[in-house]
Length: 347
Image 1: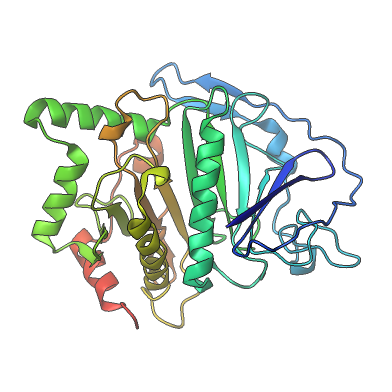
Image 2 (image 1 turned 90 degrees about the vertical axis):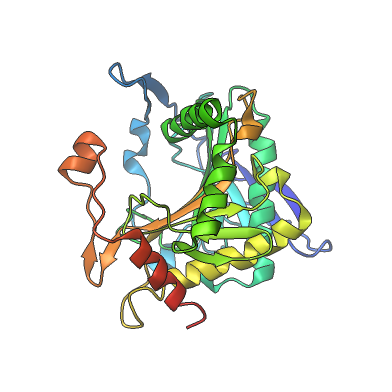
């Protein structure tokens, strides 16, 4: 992998990741951009203690532009974009409209391909591996920034999810706090360890392998399953069989298989509802242990992949119980979801 670091016209960092060592990136951003002025504020819910980022500057961010004005496509004559080169493989740059900024974290955009019509599932294994390398590199870089506690790589796909740019991309958030879901996992891991003397993530993977009813696929180094108490209609958790706290700790064999397994899961998600249904909207969330956690080795790296589509033409909305009380109600039995995801393997 070759990494080329440069800056955009307003001073934001932009990084090219290429598979070939002889790739040269020299294009300069010609846009007359003023420096980005944004500052987030972190407040804490007095009733729960949960952190909330206040980022009012994001109200003016780009929203569903036409394809010929996509800011994530490569630059062309007469059409400027966030990426000055005429083509690229994988690109990461600082978000122009960050939710976290001004010394309270950092937000980056990850472009998976320069093809406006492709999705992640359309990538080759080599390109998917390059994205994994970029996620890993950014995790290392961002975790070293002052005040950063947790690094979160994720992708939102589909207008139903709220995506404002359809070009295949994800984001990386460097949080200045431990996110509420991770904090809950930390508590449960501690409780399980105190009660059993064992690790929660190890026991979870062992139970799903032994039960097998909710297992979607299994390889030498990875296992994917629908969780026993899935929140979402179709939800898959992907765990390495050897527990590691983050992407940095994956060994070579697990990294190679990761790209293969991840692509297979995304392709199965697109087959759930049949060939006549539009692409399945989803969120793909990589959970990594906080870098400030003294016992971070107890926590397990894993992917949580889920969709808000519950049936053909129907969405699951977070209504009164979910949004108001955080009490999820799932319309699809997890065992049925797992069976469906096994049925569409290689279809």
